[in-house]
Length: 283
Ligand code: MBD
Ligand code: FE
Image (cartoon, rainbow, N blue to C red):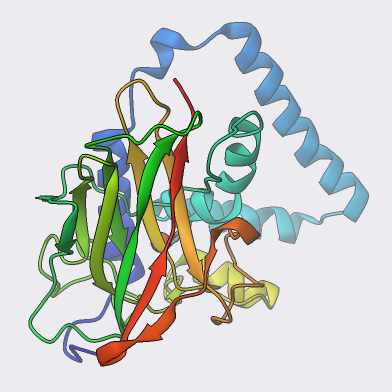
């Protein structure tokens, strides 16, 4: 660990993720909600739960365990984590069914808008001696019809070599390993960063308790997060993984796709290099 005195806790990262969601993503659901649609979805969810109870002959003890666990998820601020780990991948699958350009995947709970702007060739903000294997990540952003997209934005965020995210774990500079890269006049980018470590769901909160109680594991494979955007095009939310890395074939969040796995080549000076191009659908 880079810092042994500060520990990431479920309650602290959960509170930050909940606050972040409430700030960025809560529109006015009541203004846009369609009664028939709410009826359809809410009835279907409730009926699915009834079916589970009947099929598995769930007991009062289990009902009360569920009730207390659901209460603790809220108390720990872990609704964003729970939903993004175990539910979001299916929402993304349905939303992206007709996409023709690059594959996307889930956003997860740790995106923060407004990361510092950087030129197309740049290093992500990092500490002196930032631990981890240096990585040169380069490529080009084009439209589905093949035209370069000059000035496309690549918002990037990632965990550090301890698997921790700035703004969701203590003791890390605010924008560490977070940046908004502005592609060059050919849509090109060449970003220097470090390879992230796998991410472990906090073990001291309600999601960690579920994982332990069910005999699952709490890990996501190492990944880079990106939102790639350009005027007139659909924003691509994606993640990139590392071939052969731990948990690439067993992501707790089910968010790996074969098209999203990088295979960097070691090159001079211990820097791993990889090229990955993005294709954006027209809006
Ligand atoms: C992460 O870093 C993440 O990307 C997801 C999807 C869920 C939890 C933590
Ligand atoms: Fe992540």
